[in-house]
Structure formats: structure tokens, C-alpha cells
Length: 55
Image (cartoon, rainbow, N blue to C red; front, side, top):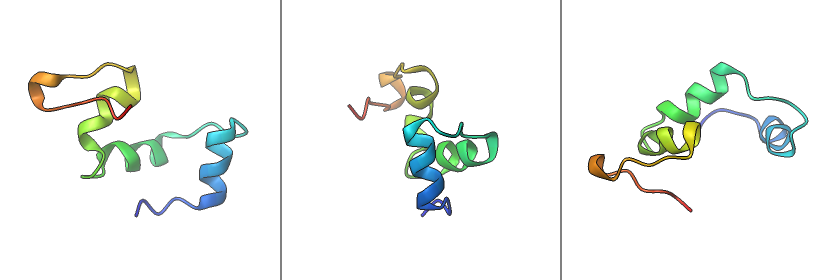
């Protein structure tokens, strides 16, 4: 869906490799995840704009 390899994703998740700007922008700009961009970056949510925490 995001064209990020599973091996790269596992390295990001394990903290082996830091996610660069390009893959980060793929996640935050994808229509399915865009409303969570603020939460992904800051941990905050904006309920007034329809944003909810995925947790």
C-alpha cells in the first residue's frame, strides 16, 4: 500500500534504522492515514477536525 519494503519497516519498528523523510511522508500523506498525521508526529489529536487517536 505504501511501497515500503517489509524489511525496511521491521528495521524502523525495531529501532535499527531511523525512518527518513521520504518514507515518513509516504505514511503521513497517504489518504488512509492522513487524519492521523498530527498524532504520528506529536501524539496529540484534533477532535474538532475529525481526528481521533488510533490507540
